[in-house]
Every structure is written in structure tokens, then in C-alpha cells.
Amino acid sequence: MLLFPARYAACVFYGVSLWAVSVLPAVLPFVFLTVLMARLPAFSRLFSRLAPLFGRAFGVSAAGGCTAVLSVLSGYPAGARAIADGYMRRSLDRRELFFAACLSTTSGPAFLIGTLGGLAGGGAGWRLFAAHLLGVWGVGLILGRFARKKSYPPVYISQNAKNALTESLQSAVRSVLYAGGAIALFYTFGCMLTDALAPLKLPQDAAAFLQGLVEMTAGCISLLKDPVPLHMAACAFLVTFGGACVLVQQWAFLSALPLSCGRFLLVKTAQGLLAAGAAYLLALP
Image (cartoon, rainbow, N blue to C red):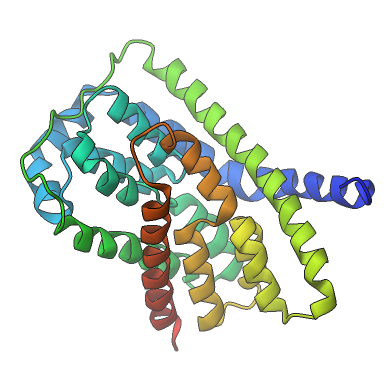
């Protein structure tokens, strides 16, 4: 950064543009609506009825199932934030916390179907979304067999619906601004990595994958310029694992909880590999 300030200042600018064009329009409405929905009493009552289903399948309570659905609808880091909020309010039990966290750190349909699917075309976004959920939920089903507690902790208690509209808007804006800062910063780190590896003359898809391990959005966009099955699989892994940028966003909320970072990364890797395999098969002609 000190040696080439103009080069990396331009990278920061492009990272902000990438967020503003590819992430903000697709994600902000979903984050706002899901945060608002979670504050309504009807949402809590619905998930109270679904508690036995989540318990048998994933070893989590209604609160854990609620955060998982919120994560699927709005994408990261909303799920991680919901996990942290639920634990602080004691609606998530400590013994289900790890299972719920692994289940609730997902991307959302707006990004996968709207942004990446719009880039790749041909229904690629829907295939990526299906592979992503298969990876996360498939590993979640396996983890659920090892859950130590099969009774259900206290049900997710909705906050007071008063001022829900303005509070949800403030929460959504803060979340997407935080994501924007992370994308701009880690996109710049990805550019630095690409520059450092340039003498090795790596294939373009390998360079894009390495960049995606630092900043997922840019890596996936580069890979899906040619959405062959291998590139679809690599993109599904990046979206599900998250890359450094997404993992830092999620761990910013999860770090205060009694969770093992190593175990969490191991599960995210397994989810990414399963999603990659599913995406490859779904992308075959």
C-alpha cells in the first residue's frame, strides 16, 4: 500500500463500486424485510410450532431454526448477528449454539440468484443456491445426530413490535454498510495477493479462486464469466465457505460467544466441499 498507493487506492474504489452495484441493491431489501419480520410476534409463533422439526433434523430449538431461516432469506452476516442476539437474550441454549451457528451462516437468494445468477445466466443462480443449501443443510443434518440435547430451549421471543420499522431499517443499513467496508478492504487485499503471485503466471481460474478465498464476491464474478461445471463448483465452495471477508464479518458477531473458531472453520470447509460437489453435478449438461 505504501509502495503503490495509487494502484491500491483504485482497488479500494473498485471494491466499493463492486459492493454498491452487485451487493447493495440485492441484499438491502432482503435484510430489512427479514429483520422486520423477526420482530413481529407472528414470526415467533410460527417457529414455536416448528420446534420439533428443527430438533429432530438439526438438533436445534425453534430459536435456532428461526435464525437459520433468517440467514437463508437475508444472507450473511445477518444470520451470525441473529445467533449472537439470540444467545445474549438466552433464547439459544449454549449446548445448541455451535449447531445453530453452523446452520445460520449462509448466503441469501438475492445475491446468489439475482447477482451471480444474473451474471452467469441459464438458471446458474438457482443451481448455485440449491447446491449452497445442500452443502449447509447436509452437513447440518449430520451434525444434528451428535447434538447432546434433544429437548427444546426457550422459544425465540420476539422483541416489542413498537418502532419495529425504524429499528429494522437502522439495523439493515448498519449491516450492509459493514459488509461494504469489509468488501472494499478485502478486495484490496485480494488485489495485493494477485499482484504478489503474478510472477508465477497462474491460470486465470486458479487466480480467481485464490482471490475469492480473500474476497468471495470478486472471485465468484471472475469465475462465472465462464460458468463451466468446474467454475460453478469453485464458486459454490467460495460462497459456502465464505472466504476471509465473509468469515471476518461473521466472526465479528460470533467471537463473543463460547464457540471454537477451529471447529467452525472445519465445518464451513466441509459444507463448502459438499456444495462444490453438488454444484458440479447440477452444472453438468
